[in-house]
Length: 556
Image (cartoon, rainbow, N blue to C red; front, side, top):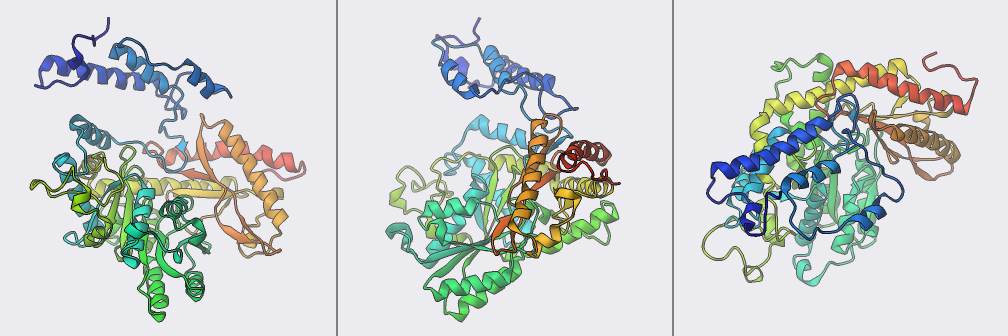
């Protein structure tokens, strides 16, 4: 019998008065979901239990079979359908080793539930006072963490690193062409980022009307950081051809290799080139969506080492922090809390060093007749693209309070420790698997295998390989991607088809493919590393034999 019936539509909603009977009913429905997920968990695999036949006709079958029911359905029955959606869904066991897809923490989930219970619109503090308060708090917290002045900084929660990069570009355009929001964008404005940068800027250039042809890609060094001499030369070239450099994105933690651009050197280079031509310097955005969380070590006393990190972990953290220390020189920053902040999707924070910059892209009072001008409430975020904003700041606030600085330090150090142990075991057991981001101590490892078990990585970097050689190696690595991908319910690895862009003997440019282990689950421990490497070895060995039967065994 349905819990919800047509003569009591209020039964579809939480109670108005907080009575215990309806609260218990609500809690029992939540418990049904939690118990259902727990029953599907499989710590010895990656996916939740349950069958899901994803045949080629899977989605067309869904389209044919799906229809809105004519009558209301009991929520208990609806919950069974919701749980079926989760069958065979990836889950963050110790073998979940792919990309930056973290487990949502309990504090993050509870913060999101808190936001859902009042369902405020974070556009305006009258509509969403809880979200506005949390947003102001987390902006202050994170500003202090990176070294911004919290009395001068500002920001808001947005839809991921993409939203932050896009708003940074909007600010950059408005700084150079104040009437652009009204009259349109001139065609001679240019943005710059490294070859290892996230593709978000491509979409932002398209969306602002500048076009991706006005995005200039800068060479990277072997550690995936931006080559600032190449930045200097390409800025000079743009200016010589009548263009104006307005925006430079410094990637402070690339998604694949944890390359960290030198924000201080990038800023100084941009200043020198621009001022030499009588131009204002470009807006500098640090895409710190991933790596920015290592700012939790900004004030850590590495000599005292209060948390007793192992020497190799301490050294790695020092290396990362030394490259991250200039975040506060950027005009804008981003923190994807749904990444290393351990909160649910989507919880990203965009920070602006000077909050007054946001007025450049704000709407006039008369353009927003529904909000912000009635004499109550003073948190009107008309500068955001969203007219409706979820209060994801509450989830971020919950996580920051629960973890604290030391909690985040311990978690990040654990990820680094496991990754270092993986690299050590990989070198020992599979020396033919070349670590191609070895210069970057981080939470991920990229490794690349070569035909004939040769190690051509340094030759590739220096442009001493022919295009056909690199393509052959890429194909071999793509075979490894396929092998691991077909078994990702056992161990779920990542991969990339764009590690570094390298020159060839013929003068072409080509990207290097590499498999990836990403330490992102709190349940992946050092003691699991041997098993993980052994599994890789079992899958890599047949690939070598398929290319040449006379090769020596791995490690032989």
